[in-house]
Length: 186
Image (cartoon, rainbow, N blue to C red; front, side, top):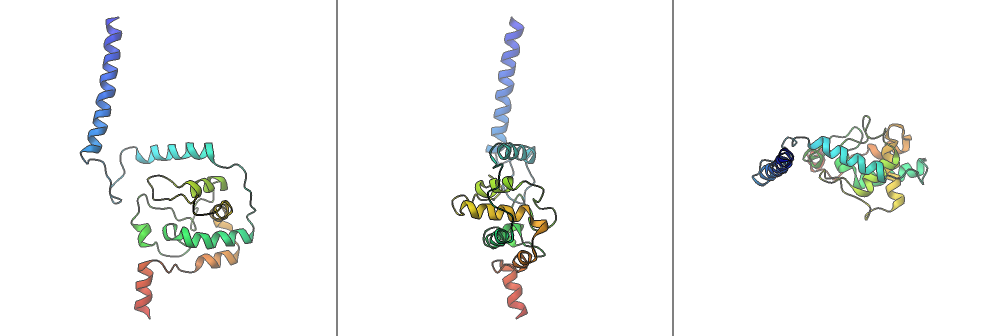
């Protein structure tokens, strides 16, 4: 019986030491907090596992809108207004805002983006945001229809109609780098 008590006491003390060590790591400023600092140990793995567990559980399984030209065009307009400053536009330089973020926001209109994600997954991310990434939730700022339009746009970014591609190809006027270059070339 004495061995069992020693084992339990050792486990309790070990857990307390681990918790104290984690507290010390954060309380003494050892944990990286700047966007330019490297990731904490296991940070990406744990964040991805938690995010995907939530999404798998909560994402809508059915899409109430068609990925037709009208909805994709509306999604492109919304994307330009709310998303492009971080996630970029096709063929455009990364904005200064996106360069300063950690983790770096994925380019959704170039390469693979999130075209392999189900539209419901993109919908969940747009509606709820992603904690500790800079990705805001738009549930209170966009209607459900608008949220689906943006979600359909990014889910179909690799097969957009020409009219939608043209909407997305116009440069953003918001980025100070673009504004400075435009002023110099005039």
